[in-house]
Each structure stands twice: as C-alpha cells, then as structure tokens.
Amino acid sequence: MGIVMENEFTVAASPADTYALMTDVERVAPCIPGAQITGRRDDGSYDALVTMKMGPMSLSYKGQIEIVEQDDASRTAVMRAKATEARGQGTAQATLTMKITEADGGAASHVDVGSDILVTGRVAQMGRGIMADVAGRMIGEMAKAMEATLVAGAEAKARGEEPPPTVAAEAPSAVGIAADVTKAKIKGIFGGGKD
Image (cartoon, rainbow, N blue to C red; front, side, top):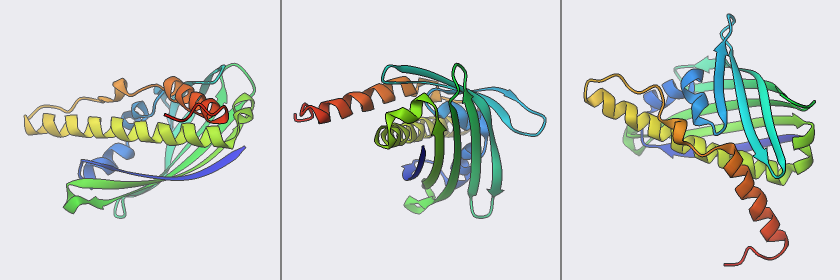
C-alpha cells in the first residue's frame, strides 16, 4: 500500500539551524516518535529501529536511513529509509523530500515535507486512512521535538555551552499516537466522536 502526503510546519528557529538539524540523521532521528539510530555504516547510511503499535499489532522495523540528496543553497534534502519487520514479512520504504524556508523575518523556519511511503505486510491491512493519520501525527510530534531540540541548542549556545545532543527523547511514542488515531476512528464509526 502506498501513501503520498504533504505536510508543513513552522519551528521557532533560524532556517540555517533547522536545515542543519534536518540533514543530521543522528540528531533528527530521535525526533521521530519510536525511532532510534543503532549504528553507522561505512557508506554514510545509518542503521535504525522504529517501534510502534497500531491497534492490536506491535511492530518493530529494522533498516537503514540516509540522506540521498542535499542542496545547501536551497535548503532542500531528500532522506530515504528502507526497513523490514523484525518479526514478520512486512516491509516499509519512505522517501522524505524536505525544504526549509524563512518565516517570521528569519526568526523562524517553515518546513515542507513530502512523504512517499510504501508498506507491505500486516500494517498495510490497517488501511490508507489510519496510516495517513498516524503518519501525519508522527510528523506533528516530530516538529515539536525538533523545535525543543533547536530551542535548547540556541539557549546553550547563548550561555557559551555545547548544545545537548537531543531534547527529543521526551517526544510521545508512535505507540500512543497510533492508539489515539485508532480510538478516534472507532469512535467516529460508532458515533462516539461528538463532545
């Protein structure tokens, strides 16, 4: 099952700092709920693990992630990830096209992320709607974690200290996001979505 999505968000950090974070795989990966870098390869790619729960399914994907295109002048980059289910036959592939532009007179950054995602196996049975909702919420949580990381880095720099490697460890997990989306879909089906 394939999903193509366009997301955008704004973070309270300069375009230069935002672009530097987005193109540093080791720093940006922990901003993605449920993701962690587990090693670096000689070819410049990284080994990664993503763990999430969707409905009754607990999923772990092991794979590689890398920046395959990068244009510093236009602040654009393309990140590619490929993974297989740790227990099962499912696969996941994602290509993220990122563009950072100036917002708020340079005090903030507008980030456009185009996602082309292809999944097979058990997770594909959840359907496009749930998958798109989960992916959208994960990008929203990634934006919050990125902003926290960038703000902490700017504050440390102002004090003359080294910036922390990441503040994103507190980002909600993909487990909670997927559970919230699944509950909302079920409520909507049975008319429980009214407050």
